[in-house]
Image (cartoon, rainbow over all chains, first blue to last red; front, side, top):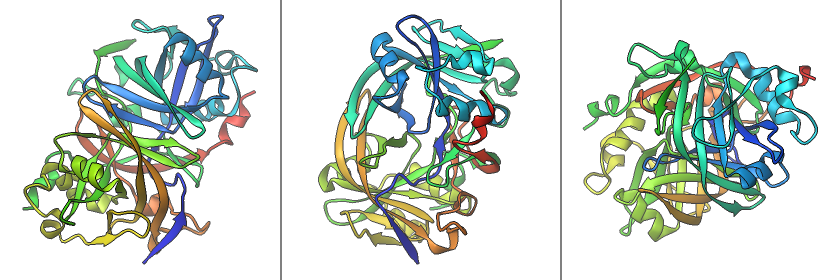
Length: 189
Length: 189
């Protein structure tokens, strides 16, 4: 039996990603989002939704670029903090001690301490309700060497990304391996 | 030291969600996606990207509606299967034994056996590279009573959603609780 919860953004999982931008003066900023996801394979693109009131919103509009920074479970306090305060009021890199590094491909900073980052140039933006839906074209993915597995790819269990649960407002880690994609379902005919 | 991987859709985590639709004749279909995410709080909306070749693509265009079905870890074989075969060729509900239930609010079926589902009407669609980016307005969220926690909300550790790792092409479960959102970061000043 299913219980109805009405019209809500109640779905699991959503990611915890930190958006890196520069403001007009070149000050780096970092803002946490959970409303986002990959949206195209070719060109590789990621979508993130941000309210117009956010300092990051103006930065993306100005610089036409952002980074997506994937925190590890050990960074959960930083990840939460980046979503609690505005870059208009404080320099979040100073308060956290995190290091802003200029991207190679786009006009935005990434967070050196985080294990996996995407450098994105703004592809386009559109308005959906109270959010602006920014589509970023992924120009480069960078991963810390310490999280790269035997297959040469970033190991999700070393990256240890954080999940957000909307409504329950809680963070969770990644759990056990469940199977190989495009494989475990072949047993059903 | 960071290693560059180039322009790829390589980011963690992405969700494993099953899109439920009806075709022209009323046959229910289910298709797995990982390119998606919440994209607006008000109105509550979710974005999913689907290639035009997919049977589901035509169904959404025709019916202007879809459901998002969240599988549990125990459904991983079904979740993989729904992404391996086309609804043009087979009736995936027959082959899996899953039950298609007509939604209350929209012209699309949901999967009875899955613990959490969203009923969405098509808000708009746009083209991004080889994908169509469908924005669905969430008209209702339904959760199985067995996954509802003490706080009256769906417990993510009972829902046990599946994560997909792009490039590594593997499925993972949800792991340990890491902390309360809008709270654990308050210790940083």
